Length: 525
Image 1 (cartoon, rainbow, N blue to C red):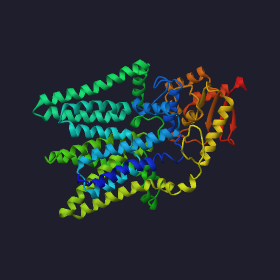
Image 2: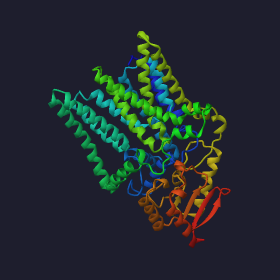
Image 3: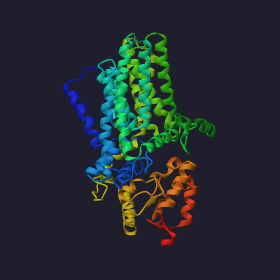
Image 4: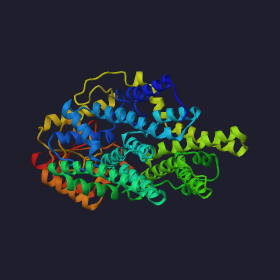
């Protein structure tokens, strides 16, 4: 990469720190204003709040991430106090800054020209998708590529980082582990000094075992190690790729083209977000074929290892889109980096003796990048209306200094007041719609492991949830009739056994002008 002046480095650092802090990721809004994401932010807040009440990770709470991803917010709640603001600040700002910083370390090995680097940098800062979950992957990739041939201490640190990857989120561990397999597999086959390779591999394994051993001792002492293993295995089997339950699945363009005669609608669909999912896959395949071709022509160099790793990272993230296309942003960062890589290749070729084909491909890359940006125009429009949409400043306990809309504030306050009037802190309350943030805001404990009911999709999980409700008899059950149905499947349809139980043992009433269904035990009516 071209050298940067001290002034440029300071500006880049300030952008990395201040943009996530003041504006946040466009996916998470900002730490200071914007409605709370009741699912993504909500589950983190709910899990930490349950832990404050004495629940154990995985054993008493079904957690879909690694313990290192969840435990920090519990520590923050324990030390400072439970507020939704800290969830957003940690994951949306601190996590984004760390993710971008780690990503820049990795990108630095691509030797990008400034004319390519700066647009890429701005895209990575403002477009959602970069988080600590991705950051730890790219930090690990940078570490093993940059330092694997150096002192054994770096290999030891790489082993520790691999363990961190898996303990933050399983898919990060899988990607990082696959990279290790490729790196050391290549070294064992092609390197002549096998003694050095074995010693570096042993130091890597030592680092991996040290942190893994400390984690096992910690989890075992608290009594949730077995639950962590079984839950993580279930998460990988049930919530990865095409095995997602009740998912919308991949869009089928043939259905659209068959149902509609040739018109301007065809053109719009060809450039739609649905088709971008296919273009992403095509880009990953082109990248892979490009690398195979360079290998066959004996022109493969060290920088091609970077492209291979980013392509594999993108494809593994992309695989989850097969089951849930709403996770489009997960594979977005690798997509943008690959586009930047090929853009630089084409730009340099055009400068030397470019052809019309190369110029056309460069223009195509710019158009695809512009189309990706267009997806997030609504988020940019939200930023323009901040002074009017979120100009009020309200005080709401357990929310923190976050300005939310009047509608969401009324909704939160309505449920909170109802819970405080009709329950004690020791009573169980259950939210049948996917709104785990409410457990944090009303400070009540879930009678089951499932803060997101839609996760209890299989018969085994549904009966586990049913038994928990029977055993703990929540005093109140809430259902928001206008809440977002995940994958367009309502929980009433997804959980028939639970609905039968509620209808048999609970009376239904309404609050909030009929929007919220409230269920109370029949013997208490």
